[in-house]
Amino acid sequence: MRQELHRHLARFGQEHLLAGWEQLSPAEQVRFAAELRALDLPLLQQLYLERTAEVLVETVPPDPPEIVPLPESLAAWQQWEDDRARGEERLRAGRVAIVLVAGGQGTRLGHEGPKGTYPLGPITGRSLFQMHAEKVLALSRRYEQPLPLAVMTSLENDAATRAYFAEQRWFGLEPQQVTFFTQGMLPALDAATGRVLLAAPGQLALSPNGHGGVLPALRDAGLLDAWEQRGIEDVFYFQVDNPLVKMADPVFLGAAARTGSEAAVKVVRKVDPEERIGLVVRRRDGRLGVLEYSELPADWASARASDGGLRLWAGSTAIHVFALPFLQRLARQRTVLPYHRALKVVPHLGDPAPQAANAIKFEMFIFDTLPLAERVLVMETARAEEFEPLKNAHGPYSPNSVRAALVAEFARWIEGAGGRVPRDDAGRPSVPIEISPLYALDAEELRGKFTRAEPITAPLWLGPDHVEPQQGDVDDASQEA
Image (cartoon, rainbow, N blue to C red):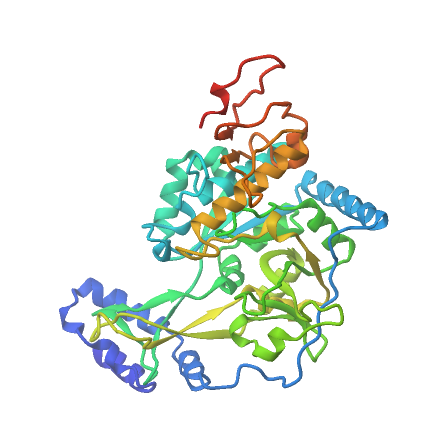
């Protein structure tokens, strides 16, 4: 077996992967041999040879896309409400499935375990997973349909994610409503030689293949076929790190259906040329796509439009709606999205503690489906209402900034319902507020429940069992966290 493997690996200069073979047990040798045979060595060789290829093929800046803006005119508001009704009809008819991409760990945040288990509730410490799952549950109750939730994990966090949902009793969802599926993995390559790195004898240094891996993972898990048989037509996609996401937003769903779009993406207005966010653009070939911030030349990023704003401002939120037939077409054609490369620090056999970036990782990105769609909808959303992802331990997109964004959102809901929220000199709420989607999924629902006239003077948690006091009742205790 070893000789046969050596001949196979040597054709691609990867025979070093058998280092430490004799240290493995017979069972480990069988397992590792199967893993080595399954490696797509021609693909890895090709990716390495193309590592120095120029990322930007175009030399002329792309154009801004056509965008459905936030409504301001009466006609725009009427279209907004029409789209909402259309989307609600699709939810009520059970035509929508939800995909949550959650393959990451919380390592950068100093958190052990899947990123979705990070405690983020401003008062309760509810996890990202709980926030998202309770939104799905609230939607399922509102539209009287058990919306299917598919959670994409990675090999690194799959077992822990499944165990967490089970321990939390699926956050009130029916167990059969939640499906877990695992994205693919790719080995890291030594940046200097292109050799596949070993984490240990018999163990490849693997990393997830990116959120674009959701497409082959959905196909291989049989979910696309199962949803087709069930009558699903729309797939709402989002990523675990953004707790502000409007889950299966009916306006978004309705607009995508009205325009016959195979793919749709929400964007926020980029105001700082230096912000690290991908931009939705119209390419020279007329197709829509996303330029990653790392692929954006400085002069393109800072170019201004006639109104003084950035010419390219449509920042991708990674919130999408896909038509199921479109995903099925890509899956059945076994479409392979392009790989993006990144230079990373990867400990490995021979150097367990590298001091500088030493390896190349390859990832697929979900936004590379956009150029493949015949029609794409780009819809603007308000950053304060729907985009504050948890990415960093400190500064922007950190636990502190995300919690602040959640409190600000809930404070606007309270004020929209007639409540009074004390604010500091900078206009920020001066008391923490947290609202469960099982109490109010959105501002409209809260307006029908929240009747308090006196100012909020203590941390306010509106959980699923909260009952508003009647006028004149003493309610000091109800505001306590």
